[in-house]
Amino acid sequence: MPRRAAYSLATIRALPAQTMYASGDATRRQVHAAEELIPTIDAKADYALSDALQRIFGAQVAAAAGEIVSGRELRADLVTLVLDLSARCAMQSDERAGGAVTPEELAREIGVASKTLQRWRRGGLCAHWVLDASGRPRVAIYRACLERFAVEHPTEFARAKSFRRFGADERSTLLEEARALLASGMTHNLAAKELAARHGRSHEGVRLLLLRELGVRPVSRSGAGERMARLAERAWRMGIEPARIAARVGRSESLVRALVDRRRGELLRGVQPSWVELPTFDLPGADETVLSAPSVRKLAPLGLADGELLGMLASARALRRLFARDARAAAERDETRAAAMHFVLRRASRAIDAMSRWPDRASIDQAETDLRAALRIRALLVERGMVIALGRADAAFDGGPERLPTDELRALVRALAVAVKDVVGNFDPARQRFDRAIALAADYAIAKITPARRGSRAAARHAVGIPMSVLRELAQWQGIVDPFAHHASFVAEAMPRGPLSTAARLVARRHGFCGNAPHTVEALAAEDRTTVALMTKKLREAENAIRVAARARG
Image: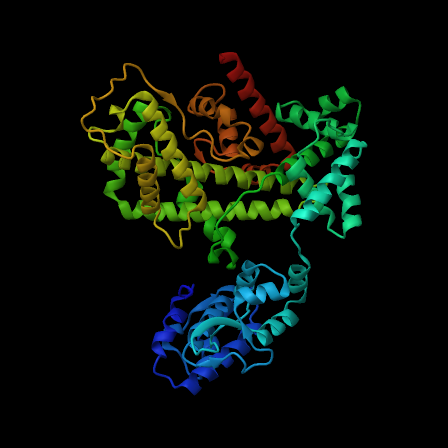
């Protein structure tokens, strides 16, 4: 039997139990009323829950008074409600035109994956508990419901039906022909285009197949414009002014700036961040609400020593004593920061998807700033998670994990870091407690590395420190959006006083160092009441001053 369906809204979750004594006819009327209401719901709109439920049950539901819900949540929960209520109706498979079949059978019948039907159910396709020929209940979908869904969502339905995976024979044929075309000097892209026309496939699908199976050709065929864009972008990131780059390559300054922006856009399109979708993200004013919390605007690190394992263990114990004083505030701060991290990742990803081949400089800057902000928040969550995980390691080893030999201690901390980063990247603050998720992942990691305690083993003695960093690498795309990160410690040292303090403060505000949230150039200009052009020049001078001083210090 399938597992019980889940709800997003607590008010709707309680309705099946509250209406369990309704007659079969009344329940059937409620099922039909919900099915009539579902197609009218706009996923992007907000609805008064009491009005929607009154249309289904014919009376006010007191628990729903004043509750406003998103259309996406309401539609998905009503589909689940239809399924739950249908279990009391003794529905027959032939009582609707076309009959009813299981989701798996229907998926094979129309040529789509069963996961596609699951996605369609969240979009409004209703399933019911139906009695089969032997009188046993099973989850099924009426063909009439599918036809209605297809009429309401023609584009999505047609796209799913037209999708076909490559079979073994077809894949073998495509690869054989592709090798011949590539051997004749044709590029991957042109070979994919020709094969797509031959076999009635999409160009993009064939291209991805060739890249996956054959890889990138060793001989680069990039044109002069692409090479120039790469050169200009590298020089620009090193602090060289576009005017000097233009003089070096013999092009205009405006073209160099455009090539730099295009290259930055291409690098951003290679970034594919993942995030957790939360229902609050689509509410009006989410940009201000989600990112306005003090714990998001001030990103001061906790102070976990990173770079030397014995110092990390000692600092983690001191930080745990601070957390114990106000565990509730720490949990709320973790949830707020996780929601903000997912929000800026979502916003950056959507902005990147909307970029043209020659993107606008402001949109590039905003996307890079959002990704930097996500990195800063992720660093805080990983730092907090490592404190918790090292606490679990303290509990698992008598006398602490520093009693382990050096190699085993490195392996343990490395496994804990991997587990913590995985939890942080997938943490859903609406469904989980951060500290519990981290503790569970840490326990699994410890059990894998050291399946049995070695109480009788002599403790290892570490005469010197054990160098190792766990907070440096947080994402595969970190180097693209955070190339100034290796100067963060120097900026922190230069901020309090000295000739570089002004430049260091500006760089810290720009890149999000020393507890600051990253800022776009436009935001910095607005805060300092100057123009974007002057702020850009001032920022480049400050960055170059930091580079020169850091290089001189060695």
